Image (tube, rainbow, N blue to C red; front, side, top):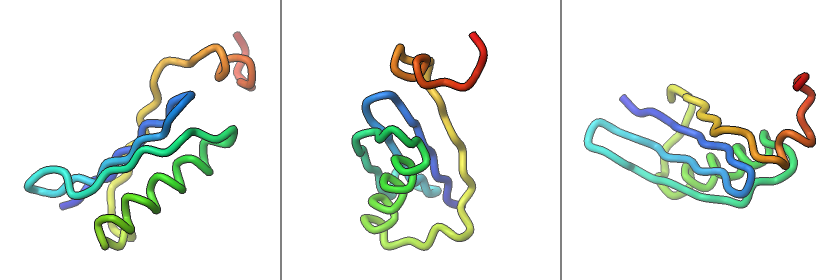
Length: 78
């Protein structure tokens, strides 16, 4: 089984692809204003590095505590 982990932070977005024997590939890209774009770029980079198709991966989204930048653009009530 393979797993894909994503950590979207205010400065960088990190991705790791794990297999039964450990890390298969990883990537770190600068975070863009749109979290989805950052995640897509990091996932594509790790997928290219590993040569794997991610069609059957399990996805886990990890989100660290908000930074002031995140809070200033959040649509969530404070």
